[in-house]
Image 1 (cartoon, helix red, strand yellow):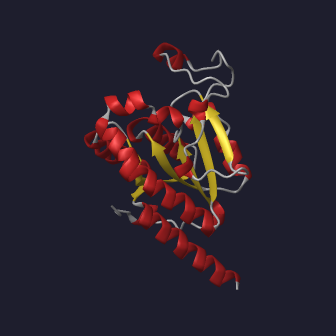
Image 2 (cartoon, helix red, strand yellow):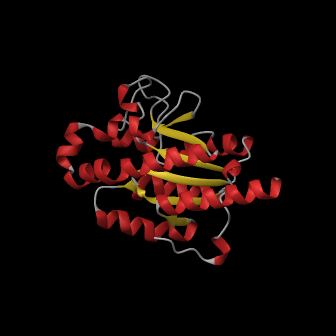
Length: 214
């Protein structure tokens, strides 16, 4: 999957890199959704989640920050939701089990979790502020859905001055066609790589940093 032009070939130094896990939560694996969307259900279980686990485990071991965002209102009645969420009937109340991060995403109790009530995590959370406080300049995005919240995260992050990378095999959506089209459409705003390629680049950059420091 690796197709990086020279201007986007930045090193992914672990201390400056975060993995952003988007909407990998209980609401996205409900039985009725899986029954209605067989491709999606199979892709999540057999492809996206195993790839995401490898990404989070590998990046964490290398020293990267792991940040999660989930769809969850700040209130039980959802009065804080975006207009679009209200019009769409999208409500995951504060404290709902549907907002719980799936085990395969490898959440740990000191990780940052930002609840959002719009498609764009940078629009409806303090993500940019938090990343800058931690000295993060590189953001590797993975999760759900490729053509919706992943797309928004990539484009908005790029516009806000972050160096964006999409781990394409750790994302999925309703069909393979929609997934591939989304990667192609927002590829101009980020690097699109496989999890293996991302981890190789993080490892290489980390080794170079240690060499210079030593």
